[in-house]
Length: 381
Image (cartoon, rainbow, N blue to C red; front, side):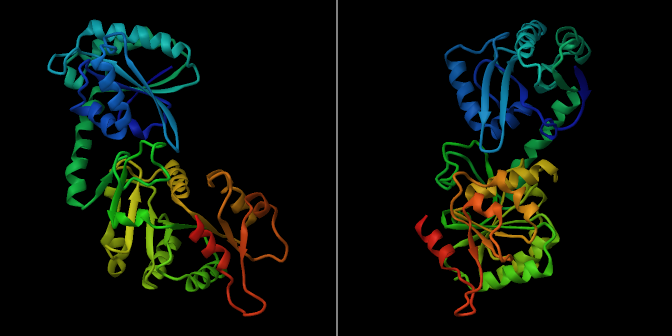
């Protein structure tokens, strides 16, 4: 089933994405450049395939991109032999015949398909559109077909790179030394960072709290952080609502180091607006795994939380609502380890038994918060 659309490819959820390429291993402009930047390991494999003459019209390069968050198939669809040459209709036809056969075996997939050979390729969209309808129009697979304006407009995304420099954003690629050890070899995500990237090397405590924390929950969390030695760890936090920002300001005023994971593109993060006088280049790191100009999306919240938990050496849960804790189970690393919770109950809750979580409460003997299990857990990880 075809649906002709416009806009940004990556605003559409899909598990198969088609990228238009040449056969000489170059992705230097337009949509291909965006794919190269977003999927560096895919690009390296594509280059190797081109050198071995394994990429040709009607013979795409297929890459399964599997990171810690999602799995997606990239189909590098040749529309020309050399990047200097224009695209050819015969190459489009050969590729569509191959793609039809491939998608016949993937009926449940959702596909993004660019205007093949149009834009930089120079082909007539009316002709290419009819070819797409001819070969793919009767398939059951959901296919989003992007008009050529979308392909050309993706040039605007190339402005990311200048904007990243302008906003002092550091890009950490999977092959960089600073890439987190928790992700190395298992993720192809670029990390877009503002602040002190060296904090990634510290031991990190992720704090999971209700989106709408009560006054009791907020005060309890502040009491716990009051007892944490500020130089013993980095706090790993979200920044998605007013509660998050208020807590962020409170812990920064205490002198803590913190890593904040945001659920939208780094170019949409305003340091001055969000932190005002609280910003400290040495004690703060803001990270986004979304494409740099990505606006807020519901699924980015989920991705940011998954990513944050992959970074965490330990996790502290703060919630009076047991149902809210149940919903977090899918985001926590298995086997469950180094998970702690602020205790609000007389009886142990079943969810904490599943998590093998240790409670943080007030000692009957001293009247102080017992943090020893959490601190020793971080020290030994």
